[in-house]
Structures are given as structure tokens and as C-alpha cells.
Image (cartoon, rainbow, N blue to C red; front, top):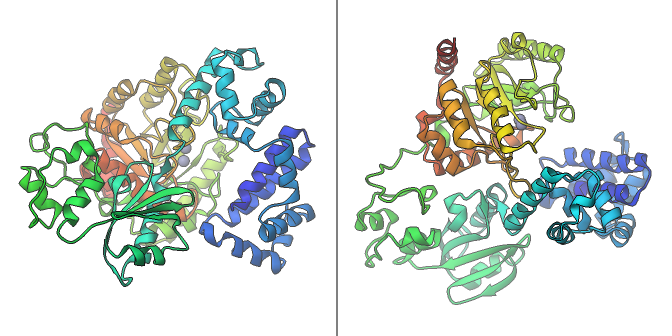
Amino acid sequence: MNISQIFENISQLLYIRGDKSYRVQSYQRVADIIGQLTHSIEAENEISYLSEMLETGQLRTIKGIGDSAISVITDLLQKGTSNLYEELKLEVGTEVLELLKVRGIGIKMATQLYRHAKIHSLSDLRLALSSNRLKEIKGLGTRKIQSIETSLNYLEIVKNLRPLGIIRPIADRIVSKLKGQPGVEKIEITGEVRRGEEMVSQLELLLIGSPDNVARVLKDHLKDQVINATNISGTINQFPVVIHFTNLTSMAWDWIVTTGPEDHVQQLSIPGSDLSTEREIYLLSGLPYIAPELRRTTEFANPIEDKLPHLVELTDIRSDLHMHTNWSDGLNTIQEMVNQAKSLGYSHISITDHSKSSVVANGLDPNRLRKQIEEVRIVNNRTDGITVLAGSEVDILKNGDLDYDDELLAELDIVIASIHSNFELSESQMTQRIIRAIENPFTMMIGHPTGRLLGSRPGYAFDLPAILDVAADCEVALEINASINRLDLEPDSVILAKQKGVQLSVNTDAHSLPDLQQMKWGITVARRGWLEPSDIINTLTLDQFFDWKNGRQQSLE
Ligand SMILES: [Zn+2]
Ligand SMILES: [Zn+2]
């Protein structure tokens, strides 16, 4: 149960039903408060954590949590639901909330569709699209309808997929539960999760051991267990899990087969029984060892001739150049972020809060940015062992201009330019917009270049090869945003960027302390994109970083 999410649902359903706006807002506010309280807590501990806050009376003291919220929270914690929520589910239904996942449909539009077009679910929306009924709705022009269709198609494709960053930690937890248990000799992660696909359709493990023991150890975790001769399958949080069984002589080959993909496996020879490692099997097939992230079908015809890269590793990364603090929409102070980054061993980081046009994200106006730069310098001076750079994630305005004037941009150590608005421009307008931002001499990096949100929003339309050509000319880096919901750029685009000589930058875009740990997901994408340490500006030392910065400025003058 995600209590913050339920409050958000209640707020949205109240809006659609037409309740008073103060009531709608008060439930949204509780959703935000609880979201912040439970942000860094494991989902399985949420109930006990909030129950304790309720019992000790702590919840009641928080501004914004009134009597009606307390009674809903109490019901949710004790009964698993609340009368109000049940009433709204009956009256309005929850499927209408799915409409909000579609790009271009906000709560107002969803309400309009619900009330005036009887569109109560994604399938209603699909029907209305195919029967051409959407254009009768006020506020929906041709372009908006097109964008709704693209987004809807995307949602249908990803319906059964989950982000790697959600599933991989679950895989790690099962492995550590099983490791060392009697009857479990060896266990490895395999399949799509091992290959590091950004969205995965199932979680697979490969195991030497006794099926009965495994079933018993996992009885509280793996639901709907089915035990076969060769595997156990089941679900965790309604997500499919398969545990394959093998033995010592077949382990290496079975690991290759279950890691897949099939076309890749077909290039390999089936080994005799004396081959005990994957490396030996590749050798027998006349190939060098191919890292799981590179086991994809399309990239190379002949890995020897195409020369395998010396792939980047997490330990090569010296800096995280994109993160937010409570100056804009982050949760923590500058100093807290710096201390955490230092504990991760970085040589330098940059603080890059939002710019003034990102109003919902509490973006900084020029005066606040000037104050923040001073604050960053102070924190930097009093903190040993790490260098803190002053930066900004500056909005790219609709016409491609940056959100601050040149004089202010010149004071920053790093300028990341990102798109946070006007996603529905035509492809050529969007391409021109991004090119204009890249050509701005202050832009050093384009943040989350496609704007995609995994599982909910496809990227906006633009001409990537054209952008890459300009980025290569202007020596502007493109980001691999490591946030588990973005992973943007994605691997195929990273390969193209590298071919065109564009530098990449892997960053967490952290909005809280735990987010700083997400670098590893970005590194997985970088590896799937064939990147070596020298392709990534985060592997530079601080001096090298400034050499890069100054060098590109000189060449642009
Ligand atoms: Zn951003
Ligand atoms: Zn950001």
C-alpha cells in the first residue's frame, strides 16, 4: 500500500467529482507530506513507520494534517482502505486516473473527458481516438490528439514492463535471502535484468540447489508458486519471477542461454561438459568474452573486427554533475548533499537547481541564484575532501533561449540546459529549439535529452542525429540521466552519440540523499551504449574538467 498515492488518488477523484477546491487541495497536500516522510523508507516498512507516527501523536502535529486526514490514515493503516476512498471508487471509479498517465492529459482535461465524453478509462480513450471523437472536445487540436495517440501507444507497449531500477534491487534481495541457505549451492541473476535492459518483463535467477528448499525459503515472498522439473515460477508484487535450476556441469552454458537474447546465443557453440566458465564457451566459439550488457542483437556482426570496448565502470566515475537541493524541488540542503556525495567518494559535484521558469519546481530567480552561488562557495570552502561547483539546470525556453541572461550564466561553473515545458512542439520546431540551446556558448550539457519517463511518457519528437552533429561541433555533452525513471539517453542513442564524437555525462539528477545512489543505473546504460571511460566527462579529474570547459570556450570564441 502506498498511502501517499492513495491520498493523491482521493484528491484527484474529488476534483473529478466536482468537490470544493480547498478539499481537493488539502488531500493533495497530505499526499505530498506523506510522500516526503516516507520517501527514503522501504515500501514494506511504510505501514509500521506511519503507524508509529500515528500512535505517538507525531503525525497530528504536522501542519497540513487535520482531523479528516488522520481518520483516513487510521482507516488505511488498520483496515487497508477508507470509507471515503471506497465511496469515490464506487462513484467515480479509479480507471479514470489512468488517463493522467497520458502526455497532454492533466486533471482538467481528464475531468472534461470524463464528464462530457464519457471517457472513463484508457480503453474508452482508445475507442474515442479510433472513432475520431476526440476532436469534438474543446481544447484538443490535431497536434494534441496526435501526441495523445503517441503516448497511448507507448503506454500499451510498456504496460507489462517495469524499470530496471525497481526490479534489480528486488533480484538482489532474493539472491541475498537464498545465498548460504541449506540446499542452495550457487545463485546468479540472469535474463533481461542481467543484461541491464532499462525496462524488464520478468525477473530471472539461475540456481544450483533443491527446488523444495528454495520454495520454502521464499514462501512469504514469492506468491503463486508453481514448481516444475526445471524451474520455480511465481510473482513478487504481481511481477513475474522465474528461478531456473541447473547443475555444476551445465551452469556456464545455462547462464549464457538464460541471459540471452536468443539471437546472441545462436552465435555460440554448444560446449562439451568440461567448460566451466562463460569465457571458455566464448573462446570455443572463436569470440572474446562479451559482457552481458553488450549481448544485444543489432550492434555488431563480428565483435572481433568491431573491437569490443573497454567498458566504463562505476569506479571510473569521479563526479556527479546534476543534482537538486531544497533551494528548488530537492529535499535536502546543499551541505547534506555534499556530505553524502563525499561519502560516495566523488572528487567534485555540482549543485544544479532549477531556473525561474520551472515554477512548479520552485525554480530560482536571478537574485536567488546569485545568493545560492555564494552559499555554494561557502559550503565548498568549509568542506574538505570534495569540491562543490555552482551550476544550474536552466530551462530551455520555447524559442530555444536559456532562462537566465549571459551575465549570470557566466558566473556558473556548469550550465545544464533542459526542456521541462512545451513538449508538444512539432519535430522541426523542437529540433530547432534544442539546436539553439546547444549553440548558446554557455550551454555545456543537455539534460535528459529526450524527456522520456520510463513507463509513462515517451520522449518528445526531435531529430536526434541533427542534434548530435551540432553537439559535436559545439562540444556540448549530452546527459545519460541515471534516475531510474528516466535513463535518458537510451543505449542506441548513446551508441550514435559516441559514433558522432559527442561527449556524454552520467548524472543522478538527485532530488534527495538516496537518489545519489542511482549512478549505477546510468552506468548500466553507458555500458549498453559501448562507452569507455574517456567518452564520459564524469571520469575527468577536477583540473581536467576545467581544461575541458576552458578549451571548449576558447574554441567557440
Ligand atoms: Zn530536469
Ligand atoms: Zn534535474
